[in-house]
Amino acid sequence: MTDIPVYSYEDLRKKADEFLLKYNPSGDIPVPIEEIVEFDFKINIVPVLGLQREFEVEGFTSGDLKNIYVDEYVYTDRITRYRFTLAHEIGHIVLHHHLYRAHKFTSIHGWKEFINSMTEEEHSWLEYQGYAFAGLVLVPKQSLSKYTNEWTKKIKDKGIFMEKNWDFAWELITEYVAKAFLVSPDVIEKRMEKDRIKKKYLK
Image (tube, rainbow, N blue to C red):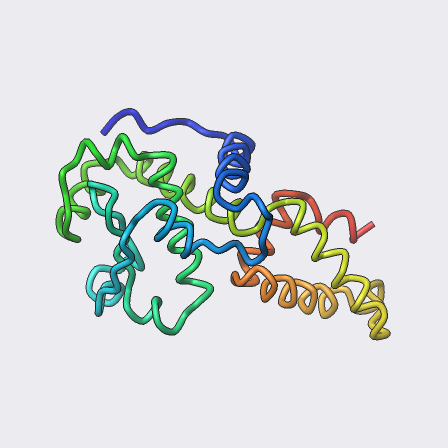
């Protein structure tokens, strides 16, 4: 396996911003990732029973880039994970489409062979880019700052002093912001860390 592009986090941010400018120009939050996948990219979202249980994967994209297969339980019962899986897979399509098209697979077994053709380092790099792109698309920087500011103010208005109850207050803020973006609190924590938003409130 060769030709895996090398992108820094800021490179990926630029790619994500370009993606959002084209496919979510109104800046809607939560980002309508399912609609973008189905209607803009014309990709079929296909639930698969037992995908995660049998193959230890929540989703994968076919080599022809026409289908995203998602574990059925994630599809029906884990909305934040489902949205992140779609964003992760669309990240691979945007960033790595040339790699997928070079491997003519349509099944999970073919996808596994594709993954196994990479070195561990190559696979880690590929997945890092998918994860980072997903977080940047689902949680744009300006919107993240806006919602964090709003919920920090609301927490203070409720009489919760961040200086005295930092961990509790920040956990509440993270949970509320995560609900606004329809992602997990872990995704919000990582995005705040990357954008150094949390440090601003620690001062």
